[in-house]
Image (cartoon, rainbow, N blue to C red; front, top):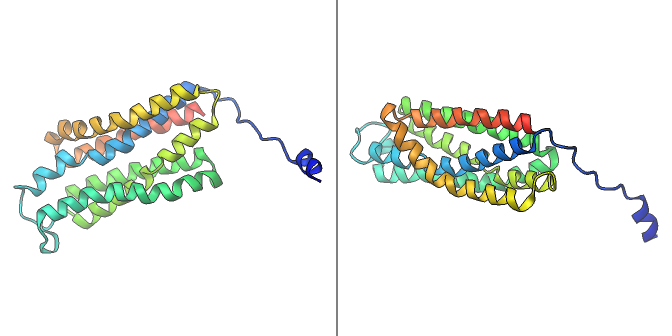
Amino acid sequence: MSAVLSSSAPPSASPAPLRHPHLLLWAVCALALMSTAGVALPYPILAPIFVGGPVDDFTHFLGLRPELLMGLALAVNPAGILVGSLFVGPMSDRYGRRRVLGITITATLVGYGLSAFALASRDYPLFVLSRFATGLTEGNVAVVRALLADWHPQLERTRSFAWLNASLYIGWLVGPLLGGLTLPWGEAVPFIVAAVVLVPCLVLLGLGL
């Protein structure tokens, strides 16, 4: 009986050849970089707003202390990543890596745009919600790892994962630098720049697959 079952089981299908495997590697590394950069991006932006900044509904929402509001605004994004990582990976198993990755990138782009709008309009609840929503969709690093594993050996496994891990760490450097360098042009500008950076990621992902 076991022999019959084993002989009747369909062979595991290998993934179709990639058109441009190196473009795919660049795309997923850029996504990994932006996932950690997005967490660290607000650090140099929110500190001057809440500490010594203007007294308004944004910095004193519901009469709460600015330090508490800043801490909440910083904490919701990694909290969203934690929650998102629990369901984004299983969704990619069910609906496909490419589709889920494309949707999460687009949603992250929209989230950055909403964060920029919330800062410009001084809307604290919208800013917190947009940061949490962005975190939910930035929990796609598990999908990126699975994608690289799926396309082995077309992408050399050890080298690809080394680049991916390096990109995650580099993101912690890029996030504060991006926020600090673009902050002089306006509080919302760093989030707009982050959204723009994701557009080439979508293009590279489409070209690489």
